[in-house]
Length: 447
Ligand SMILES: Cc1cc2nc3c(=O)[nH]c(=O)nc-3n(C[C@H](O)[C@H](O)[C@H](O)COP(=O)(O)OP(=O)(O)OC[C@H]3O[C@@H](n4cnc5c(N)ncnc54)[C@H](O)[C@@H]3O)c2cc1C
Image 1 (spheres, helix red, strand yellow):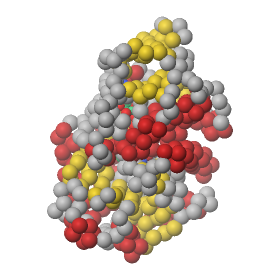
Image 2 (cartoon, protein in one colour):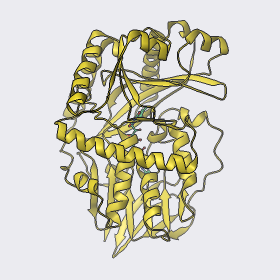
Image 3 (cartoon, helix red, strand yellow):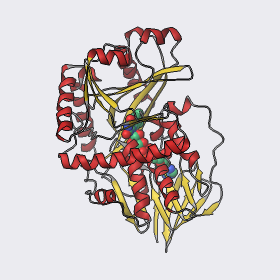
């Protein structure tokens, strides 16, 4: 018999703005009884919902249960900036390139498989372009250093025969309405999501054999013989096979201890812009840019049904407790407001209606925490900051692995090393935060 008490439940700081601007969701279905099923998926972010969708496709008559501690769209997945990126996006590099061209090509194949999977779901459920749009991405450069990082990344892409286009300051102004950017690097393969809308749509579209319980945190996981049992705050589930899709919280379930790095990143969304502010802003109604320097600021402009807003994201802090204080959220919120005002001085008076943060999970060697970690217990965790694509891919692949299918890309995922052990605390905390601060300082006006 194996018993795991779940030591920590997720705490998501600040409001999940992408979810808050949608019409209110209906009442949640909370698990308040004992149920049995063929498959249990824990976590309803990109990984969990993708695992459930793939299981439903592969096992047409099996009963599948998904549990999440919070509401769909309220966790880190729904708090993301919504870039589903196909290309290498190594946050610890200076220009995003991963490693060798061969390793990067494998990573690209995995990310594109995830985008194709999401595009199929988007087509099936009729998601509009505001929810899922394969319009590519731009790495925006605000400094000479940013431009040179774009040049370096472009030559890495050229070596892999990946299409890309260099944009000058005029083109960037036409798109964004601001002259903050000196240039950009456009690549066509990424998709851009309204993350909360996408997750809600994916959940609603799951077939009749999938039941999702929200606000149902798992507090205990145990195996007796061939059966896994979990306890939530008000109910329980028994299933022969379980997929853990809880990203860094897999550590709270007792797995991968001292091997996962928990990092927060921070975001803010303006109130609705007035018609006059929209006119003053200029540029295209919907666009998004990632920073040329991974430590810089991501910006999105979103428009739909008369609602125009700007969303900014920056800063990373390493937080081994998986929690941050309200004071930290307030401080970084002020920095986000400054990054917004620097880019859009004519709108500097516009308040941020929402300020929030969310967890990422990284490993030192950039690998996922993936595979069968106990008998019939599968992990689809540790997305290394690129969880929109990688979470989707790990979820899909966990379903393939658990059902004994063997698609070609699964072997590449299984061949990855284990997440490398971290130095002891407080050394890891001191080292990681000092490195992040230094890199953020170095990024200068890209932040
Ligand atoms: C502000 C911000 C911007 C970002 N932008 C991007 C971006 O543009 N592109 C990108 O690729 N990535 C981005 N990310 C990272 C991305 O959001 C994550 O990598 C992604 O959410 C990971 O997906 P996941 O499904 O693996 O895990 P999660 O989204 O963390 O989902 C795990 C789920 O498990 C649930 N859970 C945990 N413990 C329990 C428990 N005990 N019981 C039940 N349920 C539990 C949680 O509530 C959660 O809903 C961003 C993150 C943030 C915070």
